[in-house]
Image (cartoon, rainbow, N blue to C red; front, side, top):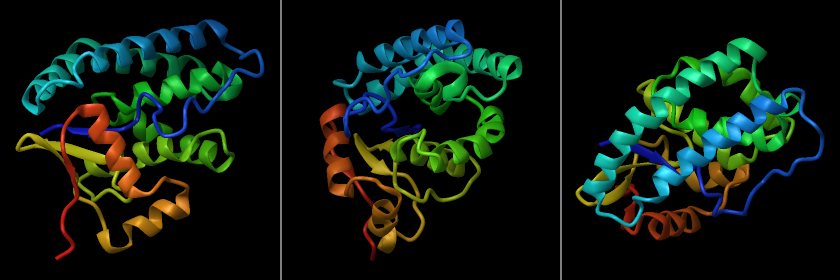
Length: 202
């Protein structure tokens, strides 16, 4: 089933960014914020339903919201380049990251890989957003995720997507700046009203 990522709602620490300076493209910033609100509002409506119903709702959102948003992100990228904080403000950049996380194809993710890595290195991007991006791209490429951010709907539960070296997962999460796995899982369960599980080591 479709993998989900805890990229939205900011329950692990509150909103990361604030607007400190006028962006170079304020109209695009405003557009990104509006797209983000539509994205988030649509997903919030279904988080208290069964796993099967949530999967159906996400499939509908993917077609009606995510696909058009991905097309628009491509046009924005082609128009102004990578929409970093200088171009669209910190909240606009955050909105871009959330919308990109739900994009239906990986073309723009691949284009954005290096600038997103640079933004994280420069502390323009919180660890959770960076990790969600990296894990999803790896899973789409047929690789195991590194930080355990992605979960699948399975048998009425949330089950962690294939993850590399589970034994050292907690260590990797700590090193990159993520909260403990138990805290993350608790937040997932509270958000989706479903039991969340990780694979057993042995």
